[in-house]
Amino acid sequence: MRLIDPTERNELTGPWAGFGFQQGHMWTPEGYTLYPEQMRWWSLTCNIAREWQTMMAEARRQVVQGDDRPSDRDHAVSIIADRLRASHARVRR
Image (cartoon, rainbow, N blue to C red; front, side, top):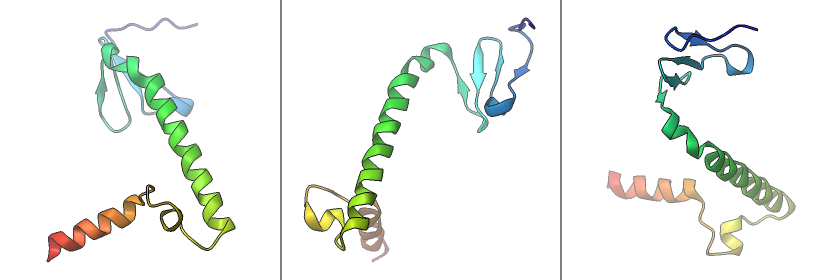
C-alpha cells in the first residue's frame, strides 16, 4: 500500500481518472477546486440527482405509453425545454 503525501500532487486513476488531491483540496476533471467543507453536500447532491433521474425515467415511460406529453395531462408539470424556447423567442423579439 502506498502512503499519500498531502503536499504532493496525487492524481487518481481508473473510474476516478481526472480527479486528484494536493495540499488539502481536491480538483475535478473540469478543473474545479473542492475543499473539505464543500464536500459535506455530496450525499444530498447525489440523492437529488438520483431522484431526478427516477422522475425523468417515469415521465419517459408515461410519454411512451400514451400519445400526449406530461404537460398536456397535468398543467402543474412544466417541460423545461419548452419554457426555455418560449423565453428565448420573447428575448429575440
